[in-house]
Length: 103
Image 1 (cartoon, rainbow, N blue to C red):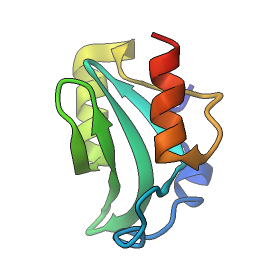
Image 2 (cartoon, rainbow, N blue to C red; image 1 turned 30 degrees about the vertical axis):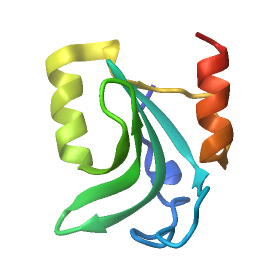
Image 3 (tube, rainbow, N blue to C red; image 1 turned 90 degrees about the vertical axis):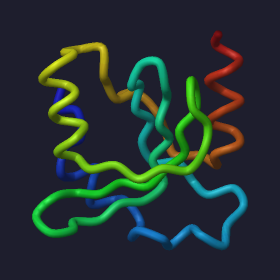
């Protein structure tokens, strides 16, 4: 499975477009042990793709990360980092509640 295919990246709203929202929509869920990253936005910046989202796990809070960093982590740690392929977009609060109910 392609971790983050181009057709999925193109569905993301632009960076910083959710700053005024209290419960933005999550479009991609990335399992990046020991954390889950709920991606809410992204854009191509200086030849890389930058994501914005909420990190939950060992750290909690809003974060930004580059596709190049994620790709490097996948190369280093292998299949431990993955996208939840059957994830459907939903508000952040529901995405977190859904994940916690599965634990």
